[in-house]
Image (cartoon, rainbow over all chains, first blue to last red; front, side):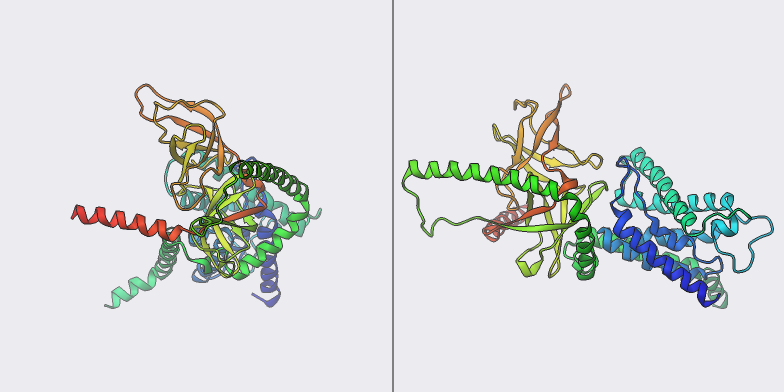
Amino acid sequence: MNTSIILKHIVSMVLLFLIQLLLVRNFVLFGVAFSFVYIGMIAFLPVETNRSVLITIGFVIGFIMDLFYDTLGMHTAACVLVCYFRKYLVHFLTPTGGYDNNISLSIKDLGLTWYIPYLFIFVFIHHFALFFLEIASLHLFFYTLLKIFCSTIFTVLLLTIGEFLIYPPSNNR
Amino acid sequence: MYRLLLFFNRFKTFFYFLLLEILAIWLMVVNNKYHNTAAVNTANYYVGNFLTFSDRLNDYFNLAVVNKSLAEENALLKGKIEQSKFMIDSSLTKSTDSLVVKKFDFQVAKVVNLSTMRYNNYLTINKGTQDGVLPDMGVTGPNGIVGKVKSCSKHFSTVYSVLHSGMYVSAKLQKNGASGTIRWEGADFREASFLYVPRHITVKMGDTVVTSGYSAVYPEGILIGFVNKIDIKGDETFYRLRLRLSSDYSRLNYVYLVKNNLVLQQDSLEKLTTADKDEKKQ
């Protein structure tokens, strides 16, 4: 991994952080669809990232989000969980021929048919943990499930739009 | 021993994951149990300043709404002044004795962050310990009750909104004083339940519900909401009442902190009676 890739990841992390806290934090569609685009900071880290490092990054990012959401521990727990399961998810969705070296987990490198299922499952695990930790019981069960589904779709949609803005689809693909 | 080490080595990522997960859940428990953890929430100095900045960006868009609500409140207060003048004139004797204590002081604060859509909602305000804010002080808004202070740092405080699953507010019907408890269920931020009103009380749609003043947090008679659904099953003791909350929690901009000057006296007295009860049990 070279310096330019690391730099790219840091810049995108800072961007997602600011977008989450200045803008997306205030968006709630129909009272049920929330968005936590900051999860993209973890989702798009390189495939070969060491798992312990990944979990640590997840812990730190989750903790910072908790500070801003007054939910000490909830985002942290959800992020750590999703970081732990990321390896299995990436493994489960291995494209035919496996992953190339230095591949980035993006539409550009892996195509929409890989990107959407990956992001959807990834975001779903995170949101599932987050919303059920928040309510900490099974009352309002179906309402919480509705919130999880709508929020997952909203987050995936925003992240995909962001991805297309940064890497516009070229015609020669 | 070697095999044990091998075992740990094989599952070291899993153990590391478990450790961090348990740490996170411990943090959650601590946060729910202990109130004054200001360093790790929005009352934190850096977080608070970031949110103030973010709030300033939004301010321009709701200037009109803020102006309107402040003007309405002004009108209301002006009306009250006229009433009180009349009362003083008619009674003629108004004592300015030191025996009369001013029980409640109010202080204005700006809301820099708020949520209404989550299961447990909080506000962050720009007053902290430096301005005399303490945990458990009441918070009211221009249209009624808002919440209770959770924790304070030097310049910021976080506030439990009424829209928090752990908030119970002692309330009463304004017309006949029947008391009960307000609780929010977690879905719609415009409505709450009014529990424990016994069935012999007559309740009508649109009845006004205000704070009871039994707890030391809020003054008596602060508006909470209006009854908009009445339900009672065959043999139940209590009504199932729904309220339309009077405050619009999604549009709060300025709130008032309620300082009870007699809180120490009331609390220590109430502690005495509970201690007395405990002794009798033993």
